[in-house]
Amino acid sequence: MVASDLDRTLIYSSAALALGMPDAQAPRLLSIEVHESKPLSYMTEDAAVLLEKLGAEAVFVPTTTRTRKQYQRIQLPGPAPKYAICANGGHILVDGVSDRDWHQQVVRRLAEECAPLAEIRAYFTATTDLSWVRKHRVAEDLFAYLVVERERLPEKWLKRFGDWAEDRGWTVSLQGRKVYAVPKPLTKSAAMHEVARRCGATLTLAAGDSLLDADLLLAAERAWRPGHGELADTAWTAPHVDVLTERGVAAGEEILRRFRAAVAQHRASVPTQLNGSPAALPDPA
Image (cartoon, helix red, strand yellow):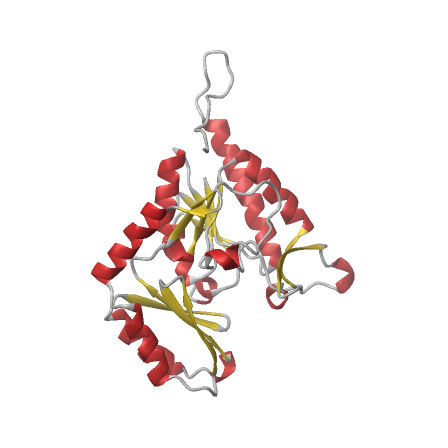
């Protein structure tokens, strides 16, 4: 099973493409998301081919902090994944529909272990300044984030908010122009383990670029991170995590190559049946 973050891992906005090569050598790009009638996210055409092949070789599970509505704008190459993880693990989609039991289990745990979302929102209202905050947002009634003017964001405010949230069971993460406040028990890794259980997965692979992906990468048996993002900025790694040198959209393409190679290696190691053919792999359904 492959559980991969999307934004700045497999798909990229125009600002995040990092096309540092001469224009004539730039890769061909495929638009895979449109928002308000404008293309928003891209991957290389080669990456699109790799992802379509990966979907036929393994259970591919998009794993994102995006809300369900934001995720559903994305049109990934190949058949629609049977499973997807949205809202940082708050929703597991099965054939596009949220699993009610999983979501209710998550909501109960957050109520038991964390300060309420309303308290986080009240802190935002009381301490932020319109000179550097563009928007306040709540995602799926599970977590909150600010859209900020990055160059104007006060570092002291971010540090104070992080310490304050930590004491209340929340994690703070700065990703691009967004400051996320996410309850600690709301994790991609918990949802990944649940999907892996349902699939009967014999190997879990993962990739991600942000601090909110760290638990996902740690929970997988093999993982990759690109040469950009919060994890790269903090030099975060782990023994089973491969650190790529590629940045931007080229990193997304390389991650897909690594996924396919790891899947092929695993399939080759599966014990064979008496007739010499590979043993049947678990049914992804």
